[in-house]
Picture (cartoon, rainbow, N blue to C red):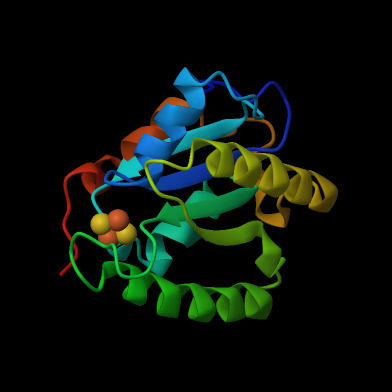
Length: 164
Ligand code: FES
């Protein structure tokens, strides 16, 4: 995926290694078109993503956060995606509370076989975030926004972490 943002809205996508990351790969090899302004972070399970990571992404100048994981019942760690679903509901309320449009956060279940769904999710979410415009938390970063590499490095520990 893209390594720079070309001045457009920036999406961070946390993708579960076992399903959505492979779905993204399938979309790529199938040459399905989707917007390039997405930084993908591979995680071992969506259950490893905490509210801290979501807030951190917005603090680093991200305009929309997508979490994509295994369908309910398919999580390799059994209940990781149930935890994700509960945290997602809480996070939307927290975002509303601090004045960030809660629709800047999306949760989707995408399997390894669903390349087309992955491309559609990225397209739909990008359009939604574009309509909302840059995140209000981004204003302080405009002159010197965090680049893709520093954002990727900030979330590197998630590449190997397993849900507790
Ligand atoms: Fe994919 Fe848990 S292993 S969501």
